[in-house]
Length: 234
Image (tube, rainbow, N blue to C red; front, side):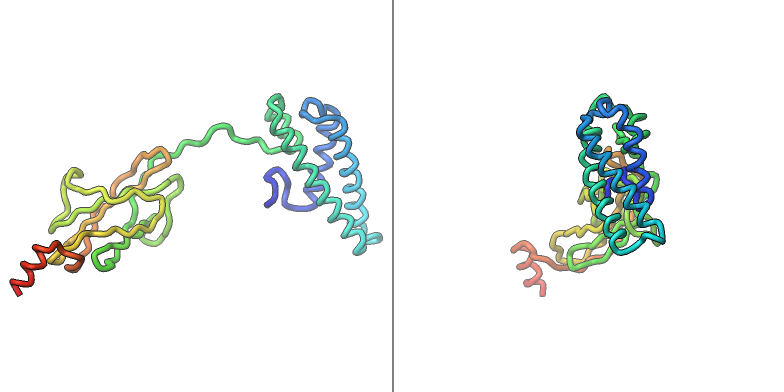
C-alpha cells in the first residue's frame, strides 16, 4: 500500500524527492530532522536523480540502468517514510510547511454526517417462520447511501399496518444491509408488516419506508397446550 503523500507515477516520485530535499534541507531543524538525517536522504536523492537520468536517456538505458533506477526508488521511498513520520510527529511543523514539502496534511475534524433524506427500499423473502430482509438505496441500486451507517427495522403482525409508531415492534438495528428476522411459532399463517429507516453515524434517522407486507405460513414449535388443542380439533 503506497503512502498517501507519495505520487503513483515514478517520474512524479523522483520529482517529489527533489522537491523534498530543496524545501527541507535548508531548514531541517524546523521540520524536526537532524542534519545527519536529511544528509542521508540527500545522498539517496542524488543517487536517484542520477539513476533516473541514466535510464531516461536512450543512449544509456539498459537492464542495468533499469535495475539501478528501481533500487534507488525503493531506497528513497523507504527513507522518506521514516522522515515523513518524524515530520508528522513534530507539533511545530505547520500545515503550510507540510504542503511545501509534499507531506500529507491530515484533517483534524471529521465532516459531520447529514441526516438521511431517503428511506430504504425493502426486499423481503420468507424462510419458514423467518423473513430475510435486504435494504437498498432504491429498487435498482443495492447498498447504503453515502453517510449512512446502518438501519433500524420495525415489524408488526396483523391484518393491517399500524397507524402509530407505538404499535410497531423494534426488531433490529444493523450496520449491514441484509438481516434475517425470526418470528415465533404460530398455529395459523400470519401477515407481517415491515418498515425501516436509515441512520447516520450520530444515530440520526431519516424517513421510514412505507410499510410492506409478507405472508408467513403456520409452523414453529408450538406451546404444549396449543399443540394438544390442534390435535383434538383434528
